[in-house]
Amino acid sequence: MSKVSEFSDVTGETFEIMRPERQTVPLVFASPHSGRNYPTDFVAESALDPVTLRRSEDSFVDELFAAAPEFGAPLLKALFPRAFVDLNREPFELDPAMFVDELPSYANSQSSRVAAGLGTIPKVVSSGREIYRAKLKFAEAIERINVYYRPYHRALTALVVATVEQFGYCVLIDCHSMPSVGGPLDPDAGRGRADFILGDGFGNACEDRVTATAERAIRAQGHSVIRNKPFAGGFTTRHYGKPSTGVHALQIEINRALYMDELNIERHDSVHQLTRQMVDVIVALTGLGGLDLAAE
Image 1 (cartoon, helix red, strand yellow):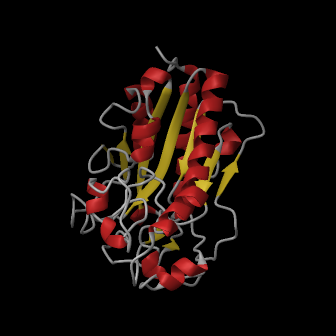
Image 2: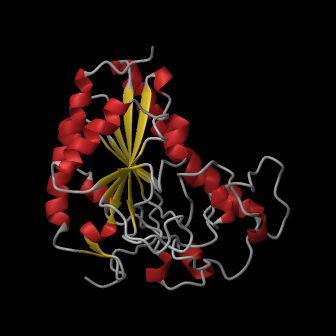
């Protein structure tokens, strides 16, 4: 497999929902950062080579959780890359330094994500390299948000609402991967990471029973697990995870060294073992269907 063989041009589709024949569990899985359809114009605007441009991609995470529909849960996956539009941000977390025109007052330019260059329209990839050769027009941000960001979140909202209507509650699993060592923009820069990090907003985004179930299942596979540090959950976890309304959200971060060559962005043979292990984790999470996690 070549270094860029997985790198493809956009097809016109922005996301895909892998549905079970019938949803039988109150679970929804989402993979917002594993997309690898790179629009031609975006690649042309970039100052980076194709492999470097993919540094922010949660490569192959959708494949690790692809079995979810077999066990009765839908899987929503973005098809476009995080470097183009980051779905795990507010809709208008934007850096004014990236744009030739002034941003409207409703744009959030003060967040820590924007300060790190990782807003809704990212300025840099996760290695800290700047993406663009020149500044963008705000109209470009509006178009990306309307065409890519909003449809994904409408689809995710619909899945969550339908699940609550059917079961009385929903457990949203937001699926991610992370570099094995903290990058220059991270609070753990230069330090090695655990195999898995579970982010539940320090207990605010889901009941502990949800996090504990995932942790037990992952530890049973021999992996190390840390909760909330350095990733407590992004926009998706905070926005959707409201246990008082019957919606529980948990972010799962997987160490990329477990399954891929981080430098060349290629799968290791170990990806097959990890995929089988994730099936066991999915099965354990389906057991949450027997718990009462509905709104109080």
